[in-house]
Image (cartoon, rainbow, N blue to C red; front, side, top):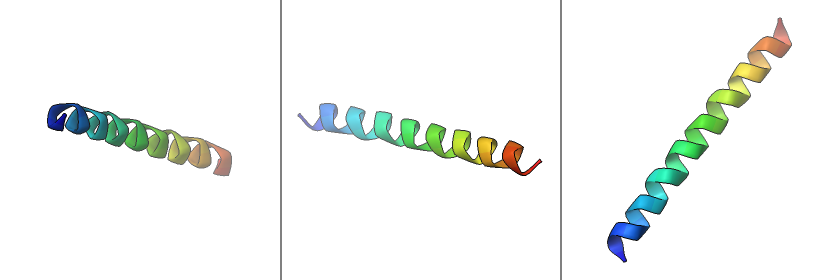
Length: 32
């Protein structure tokens, strides 16, 4: 159970970081 929860949190963190990076990329290109 603990390993599954850790894996879920790790995946969620990666997805959140990717979305944040993509959003900043879109906003950056939008400014230019």
